[in-house]
Each structure stands twice: as structure tokens, then as C-alpha cells.
Amino acid sequence: MFSAVKNNNGFTMTELMVAILIAGIITAVASAYFVGHIKSYKTAENIVDIQYEGQMLINHISRVALESSGIYRIGKADDTGVISDKIDSNAKIEINSKDEFFAFAKKLSDGSMVYEIYTIGDDNTVIFSKSVEEDLSIQTESNVLSKYVDNIQMSPQTTMVNANLTFEQSDSMGINISLNKNKSELSFGTEVSFRNK
Image 1 (spheres, helix red, strand yellow):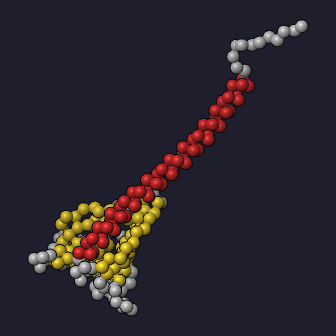
Image 2 (image 1 turned 45 degrees about the horizontal axis):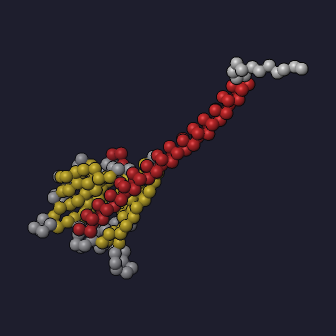
Image 3 (image 1 turned 120 degrees about the vertical axis):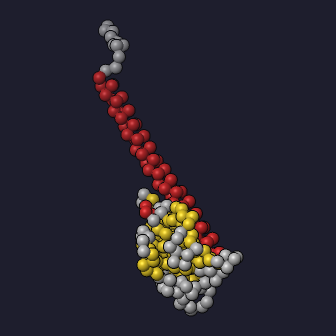
């Protein structure tokens, strides 16, 4: 009888190749799984960021508008001051480029006026500032209020039936804000009445 000779010296080359192939397949599947989850995490993180920024901005604009006597100016400014004013428009207006702004007028208890201004700045930021000058030339308390803003759309609103009013005449306004961060987009909208009109 022949007895089988057992070789206990290690793995054969074929066994090693099969083991490396199986390990490679498992690694490829795991890598694809992790890459997919990282992309999902980044998208979710972007959505959370723009939700926060958008909600903060719309709440701020709503609060300021509610306390104001209405829209004071809508336009575009440069170093020389206001170069266009759209306050007499009765159509939807979109603010989406650098130096475009809108301002609310607010009468203080001592009878003086303060103008609260929102400007589109560099890198899709919204800058909030105040002025006591009617021409809005001297601004104080300027700070970045929100990031990732593509545009702000405003339209005059009213409680009167069949009225086609301008921003200056309206007793409320509709606001829509569009935000974008790394191709993740959200929009927010509300309507605000001017309490002191």
C-alpha cells in the first residue's frame, strides 16, 4: 500500500492567490460602501448648514420687517451711493449680486429714524448694517449675517383685495431665500406684515 505523503510546509501558490483575490474583493466592496457613506454624510452636512443659515436669515429679516414701517429702499450701491432704486416697483425683485441691497425704515420712540440694511456681499454672504442717515451713506454695526445665499426674492403684498401696490405702498411683503452649498440647495419663504406702517 501506498501511503499519502502530507506536506505541512505551508500554503501553495494557488491557495495564496485565492486568498489575495478574496481579500481584494472584500476590500473593494468595503471601500465602495465607505465612500458612499462619506458622500452622503457631506451632503447631509451641507443641508444642515444651509438650513441653519437660511432659517437664521429669514427669522432676522422677518423680525426687522415686522418692527419696521416698511421697505425704505431697494437698489444697488457703489462708492458714490445709491445708483438705482426699485422702491416704486410692484413686481417681484431678486437681490443676487454684490452691492445689491434692501433697507427697512424704523421709527424710534424719540421720533428719529433708523434704517436696517441687508446687502449681498462677496462669497454669497448677507451683510446686515444700520444707518441713521436717509441716504444710507454712514452705516454702523455692520456684520455678516448669513452665508451660502444665492438670492433673495421679495414681492410687495397687501391685505387689500385686487390691489397692485408698490413696495412703498404695500403693508406686507413676501420673502423667498435660496441657498446653495456645494450643489446642495434649499429655499425658504415667508410673508411678513409691517406692524408700524
